[in-house]
Length: 284
Image (cartoon, rainbow, N blue to C red):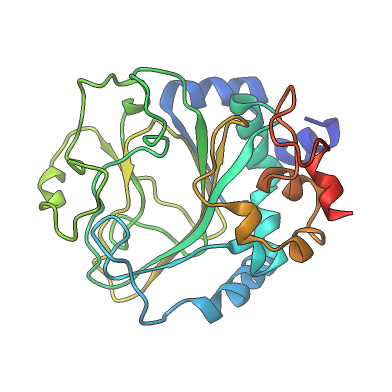
């Protein structure tokens, strides 16, 4: 990380060094940074999102949320979403965990509406089939666009679950097929190890991709919106096919770091080349 970037994030570390904050992240599996985005940036994000939210198109199952709007291909929709994806605070921890050749695996907005139920517990790199416990091969960032509370569906974690083995499993999907109503996932609500961080709008939460978590239930009359850029190691396949989701003519206008994250970069020694050349040459 550049020294200038480290200076940019130091104001959010509450007098901790980056090394101290990273040690807490490794121990707990997540970190919260309050009030990172200013009001002007939040308003830009909300304005850019508004055409895609509040539509009749909702999730298809309990995982996506049958009372939830999800917005994909974010970097193709407005440059402000690329700013979130390359924010130096999130990237500092992602690069420290995953290396500088990391990729943006997914980036989506999630808006929970009234009466949305809890998700099944899951962890974000479960598609990388390997025995646990193991290192996390991803990092998920959660940007609070609204205040997120226990009542409106704040993301919940199971304390210490990023270190669990395969023998420790909460109430989750029984198969990778997302059944519409697989089971009553609220039956797990009484667990003693549930952590529900509440975030003021503009705050950032990061979590290791091995941390079991779920979206909470929205018991209020108001929607709850977050944007979640999710990063993965450079050798892994991205969840969203970013080079198709973001057309080349749009990608060419993005900041260089955003281009690298969506796939216009090389993972050592030469993973990702195009016709024997660096993929950035495709963008001219």
